[in-house]
Amino acid sequence: MSLLVVGSVALDSIFTPFGETADALGGSAVFFSVAASLLHPVKVVGVVGSDYPVAQLERLSPRGIDWSGVEHAEGESFRWKGKYSYDLQSRETLETRLGVFAAFDPKLPPAWRDAKYLFLGNIDPVLQLNVLDQMTGPSLVVCDSMNYWIQSKKQELMKLLERVDILLVNDGEARELSGDWNIHRAGKWIMARGPKRVVIKQGEYGALLIEPGRTFYVPAYPLEEVFDPTGAGDAFAGGFMGYLARVDSTAHAQLRRAMVYGAVMGSFAVQGFGVKGFETVDYDTVQKRVDAFVDLTDVRLAEPLP
Amino acid sequence: MSLLVVGSVALDSIFTPFGETADALGGSAVFFSVAASLLHPVKVVGVVGSDYPVAQLERLSPRGIDWSGVEHAEGESFRWKGKYSYDLQSRETLETRLGVFAAFDPKLPPAWRDAKYLFLGNIDPVLQLNVLDQMTGPSLVVCDSMNYWIQSKKQELMKLLERVDILLVNDGEARELSGDWNIHRAGKWIMARGPKRVVIKQGEYGALLIEPGRTFYVPAYPLEEVFDPTGAGDAFAGGFMGYLARVDSTAHAQLRRAMVYGAVMGSFAVQGFGVKGFETVDYDTVQKRVDAFVDLTDVRLAEPLP
Image (cartoon, rainbow over all chains, first blue to last red):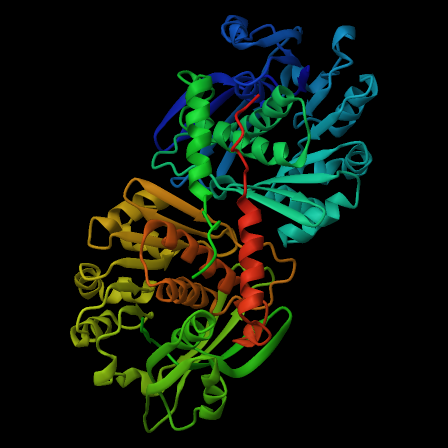
């Protein structure tokens, strides 16, 4: 079943305590696609400037990523420059140059409008609404956002939420959106505004799937070396949606498994700069890590207590 | 199999955004015992001053708590006064009055020295070593500590670690002790100093059981109302040790289940001031919450991926 992502295609310059990189492939649509394509083909809608290293994108195409929905505009590509703290727990944005992304107005190729699984990466909620208007009726709409939009486009974001099946954000965003520091009450608040479910990413602590009356928790993979957290959240979304598209289901049990695939992809993302963490990852590597995740929380409480 | 705890018996005055309480039963040995006794009888070694409301302690005895190892000394009882931030994420100590606890020199009743399961609550590592010297050979020694001892009695703490089976601390303590911000490396560092395993409590995010080459994760119970985090860590320890004493085993699968019982007890602890969160809890309540924990991480990945 077709899987479509609309988001940013960027160039990231990142400083971590372990090294730095300049103009690395980045952006929500890129991280999402690299992760999702390990499970299911992906179609990407985005925009790049005339300076974008398109050949680098195209080298990823054989993975099952269709970049033909990425518009090539005159001007500079979206660039982000950031620096992480020594413990990778916080980051500072050194520079954001929107370039052609500032005028991004996503146009879906007509043949893609009936996609069944849609991920709306973190862009202006007005554009996310525009994308929804172009769709013929997706089965599952999952949407990301960020504090910037919560502050500057709250009204549009609330309108969008009414049309979204799952909001997928990090804990700080859920707290800011709901105005509630308790993450479970925040999830409830969001579900009262449209989404049937909320996925809350908690970085090194894992992620929560909040549904009415039921919560599922997936931890983060125990890594002794975390290299670069950039893109981990979008890779999580890619694993989550890639799995659901692959099994073509949104049944509760499948959503739980999709969370594990999300966490698996997030764990690969942080193991290298940009998309490098995925370079040596194939379907078997993914499955091995899925098994490791199952072991990580397996309680084996089947036998009764003595 | 006999379960023994050595720790503080205190009076806590607590301010949270939801209310306040003065001179409530508290201290590591009290929280531990109230939780553990839901699963297995507990013997307590500690000290109280002449002003302690002993009748309140004795009301808890029918749960299976033997307070006869608690020394009654002349003077004031240990008092702690603290205030939590609006989101309960941080707390400020307003006052600590050690009272009779300052001269605490734990003496184990002779009949208790052969206890099989020993929990060394967070007290001076010199005293923790003294307790160990009085034991005839426990099967499992689990030990807590805190930043204060890591800073002021590092050498004694390191000597203690050599004789401890499991160090049970929170993430900040593990980081400070090891000097490593990565919690998995911190766990490895600690295991190289004596303990075969490390339990790391992460508050609202749950807890980790780190063993050589294997990690188990239990999330925190999803609570929309958290009332008072005081004692949650000691209640966790009580659930953990109470379960192991009950099944009389330290097998890997049982340690995992013990983590769940720990998390269950931690979740009751935060639902009321002091030990109030346990007032209406019985064995059935515990089992129901254990089942809820199992559901919280159940991936049901038994069937192969389509």
